[in-house]
Amino acid sequence: MRKKLIIEGLLLILIFGAVWVVFAIFPILPHKSVFQISKENETKLGDLLTRNILRTREFDRVNNDTIADALDQVTKRLLPVLESSEYRF
Image (tube, rainbow, N blue to C red):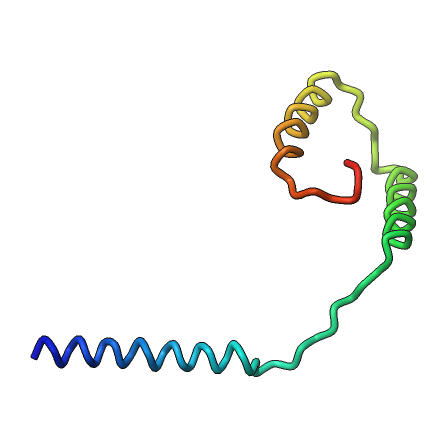
């Protein structure tokens, strides 16, 4: 009885693995193309968005040493663990 349970368990695992492999190799949904943009255009778009955000009336600059120190601490802790990037933060 115990041997039969082990065999059936292994059989279920093998069936599950086979189904998983089939769906991994032959996806059901069609592959969508990934939108790509050049680094130069991305930089231009970022600059444009930054200028537009800074021009809005709802946006106020915060000149507060406590907030600046807090952001500096967060930046110092996060930057070492981020993956390398071609952009400077």
